[in-house]
Length: 142
Image 1 (cartoon, rainbow, N blue to C red):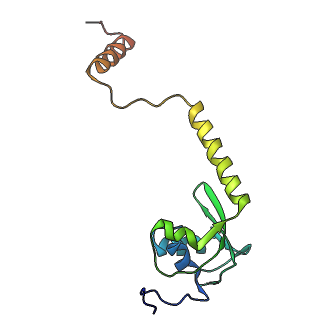
Image 2 (cartoon, rainbow, N blue to C red):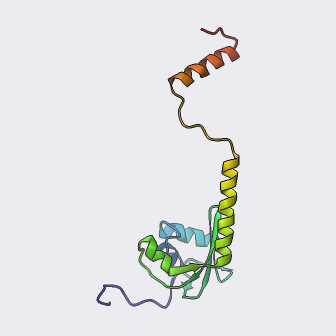
Image 3 (cartoon, helix red, strand yellow):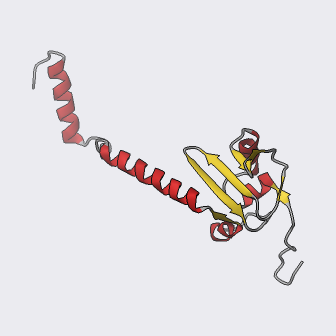
């Protein structure tokens, strides 16, 4: 250990542990499940959670609707703040461009949809709804 309390950098680390430390997944169990499920590839190959990861490896992570391809820069087996976790990898330019295009596509889709209601109807709006429903059912208006 050094004076700062940090251990000497490791030359290899389990894939699931690195994914957790780099904050791709909230728990190691989720990282292990994703690797076992084929959602994570290292250097273009499907692998197991215990695969040893080295600096210079390329990792592709599919999580939900997004996908990210990163190059491993450093290894750390401890989960640190997000700003420090980002220093463990660099995203490839192609991955960043594809992710930004997907985000802009989703943003345009969201804007094209009808606006969502602002919340629950207030007293006046509820009265209007009841009046409308009564008319639709053939009832009389108050």
